[in-house]
Image 1: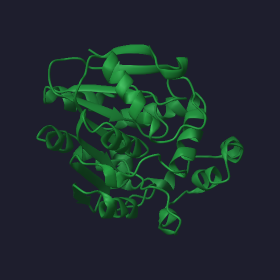
Image 2: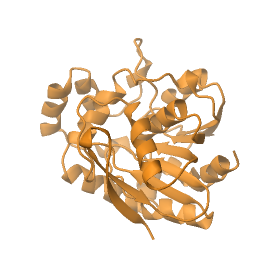
Image 3: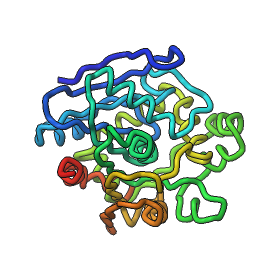
Length: 272
């Protein structure tokens, strides 16, 4: 059973949070862009099979959480700590996919006494001054608009359309099979409005508010070699700065199909 709660956090904001409860080790999931923040069936099943407790929340602007314009990636650490406190969770591992990956790394960097290990899937690297960041992206319009500021990103959202070419055949197979709930949830988040996604994109291309090189806990980096949404070069760059990282190359996977390693990643996390 999953418990849903609306929490009051710093500044009087509301965060919508979720907890699968239980006595097992806790894993804190950070959702991608855009998603509602709810615990999805394949996530819950993988955790339950291992006796794990799964906790997550909707980032500001998503799924019942109040917007927070100007937020940076680092702000996720304070929000995650507040959620963990509300659910009575002291120590936990963190995991994030796609846009959730930088937010999981923020927790690993800024909550070292509470976070035991981190795992990322298809995650972004910090935006650099030199050029690799956009190389290989099938559709980079939203992120390039974010470089021009919030108003430009909001204008872009008015005419933006999803390009199915960003997903590989393996991605579409995952979305029509074991990870169908992921696509359905992304659709619900998109229908609810663009504020969360806009503020996410602005945070990705701005200073994150922490340095991944400061992370002292073990980090697992999982990335598909065929990823057209967040190209594998992002994880290759992260591997050069993370001090204690393990990389699982997935040469045949795309942006979504890489999540077939979710269960194995849970095992890796909870062994730390």
